[in-house]
Length: 92
Image (cartoon, rainbow, N blue to C red; front, top):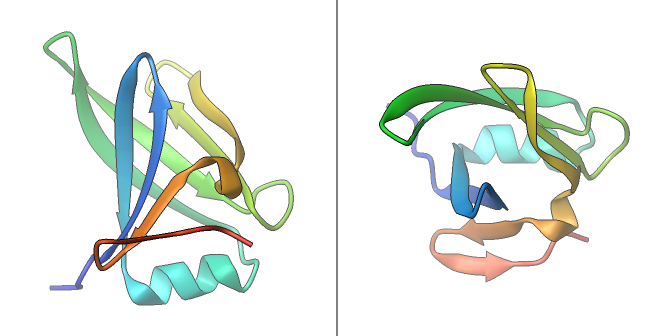
């Protein structure tokens, strides 16, 4: 099992949503490669799936969409909360 020790968290719909990443995935993102991941979540008792797309438009961009083509977050990684092994860091 891959250790998912990097957590990227953004807010939409008055809730926090988190995407766990492995060290290898995080390194891809830091290198500027486009990377996407899907994460399930619940809202009002219903299951949804969020798609997290890193570096889509440019290095440091982050787009999070969900099942019905809604956009939960469209911005920069610098606007997200980033935690590595429980320690908060800033995107630079």
